Image (tube, rainbow, N blue to C red; front, side, top):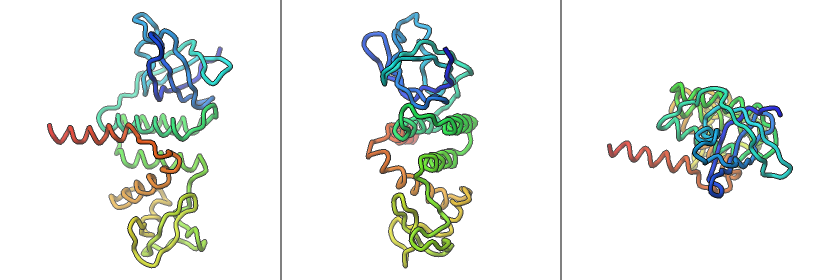
Length: 236
């Protein structure tokens, strides 16, 4: 039976000795697996089914919940620490909530793996996350054209202000309103230019607005952990 390149994105105990494991595979997308006996002291799976470990998995079954037969690490764990760790957990939550189960997203798998390596290498967190979010939105068909007024079809004007309309895009407004975007920043986002703090702030605002309907109001655990971690570092 062929092994599938995969990463664990979530796991939880199941019964006395097993685990329920959500994995993201390159060829078969997101899958729900039962890892029987994986919590037993001598299980070959013990300690292996962790996030950010490149794996080769064999599994099967007829229902929605498949049985994991074998797991092997194909490379050392991608080491994420502190804020990079929270960022990696955030990527896992996006995959878990946004991607339809049992549907291949091999290009997303590659982008996910690349982003993890960038985070591990110490690249700036905000650009890494924004690039991945934008990529996910485009792959899922939720992306927008930052350079075109969605209402008039005209090009975005650098010094004008625009409001975002979910699933439509950006429309010009007469003057600044709360939450409005400067055209200059939208034109930068169209080029994936995240070189300034103002543009990064606009990118983060857009990502949160655009992703919110598809996250269904779910509180993201990674975000709560990130905030808690920042508070803890300040008190040290």
